Length: 332
Image 1 (spheres, rainbow, N blue to C red):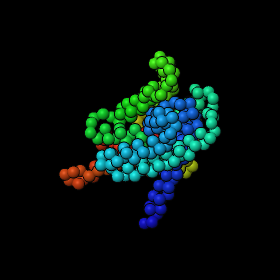
Image 2 (image 1 turned 60 degrees about the vertical axis):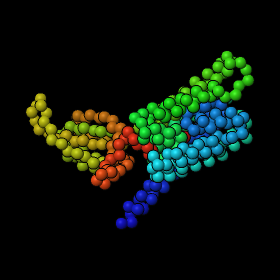
Image 3 (image 1 turned 60 degrees about the horizontal axis):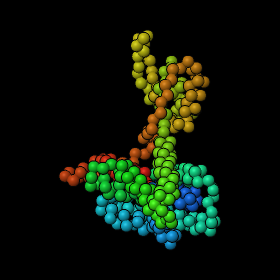
Image 4 (image 1 turned 180 degrees about the vertical axis):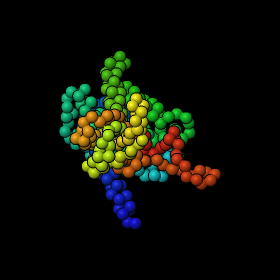
């Protein structure tokens, strides 16, 4: 009876450790590679950048980010639920601390680590995307524009993704209103390239986040036709430690009955499966396909919130269109 509790504790500890690592990666990418070039990205980090430059450096990014997160959570508490709020407070606190500390380090440094703005922004966005993706796959959240998206999705039919895109693009576009010495035309000439960099960085962050998430969930499905199916199945069980499903099939050309093996494995294990098959039957017929998600024993755990039906108190799956937990990518 105590083992499930121990396993759950270790799983939570691993999740929180990886969330912290992901937020540190995000903070490094943002403070060392994006912020020194005055590029405004999406999310509360971008909003904090606007406040930083609008106040001539008086209010740090971390302070604005944390204050707005708490304000948004105060408004959203009744709509998004207690668990979402608690996880977001943890993520927002760690993110703000990391950004605040590294922001001071960058200020003491006095210059960007990379002088070339293009490479610096691209590298920073890649690190940010890896960080956000790491946070997401470990069921974490750091608040930001996904709080607004969660609230909007509760009271309207607008999707969470569309709301987040609108919020992020609006934040990036607002950089054109930052203080500027010069004419309106000179302002446009100076700010438009920075806005383009911000939009590109926001896109790269989203792209890298999706890639990290999909890579983590990717699995491979094998369908194997062989007269030596028993030996293949035994060795896959014994050496690859993967289950095998045996199906009855009929070759319609030959009209002969035969057995068909179905195997699912992680992407990194597919070479092991191929070697087992080739060592037993070099003439085996094999199909291989990618599966973005395999859930169950030995693979991923289904992370679906359940809610009680208001009339019968029966537990039913939560509608994905109104999901407000960490099933949506967080913008730090």
